[in-house]
Length: 113
Image 1 (cartoon, rainbow, N blue to C red):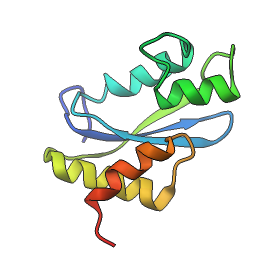
Image 2: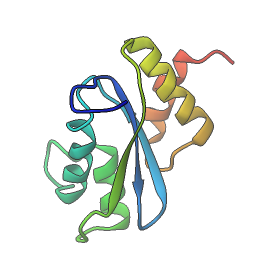
Image 3: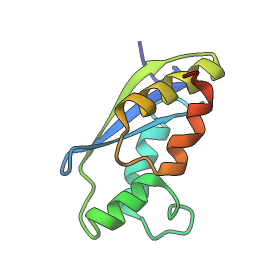
């Protein structure tokens, strides 16, 4: 299961307003990375946040409104390559709207057609 000590989470975040999803992975514990995404959305103009997917989504669709999103761990994997494969599989099959297009291409190198 996922707890504070779990590493390598693959996670999804759903924008509850637009019902759009973002998929990501991180080598950090699950309480770190998914909590950063709402911070990016809350402060989308901050220099360090500008290029983040959730900041771009918030600027485009919800500027000035408090983020309303739900993080959800989807899988844990201790092997970094398998973590990337799980993320790529989700992005390839589900095509989450909030991931930018270049971000969607990168994990696909872990998939074989």
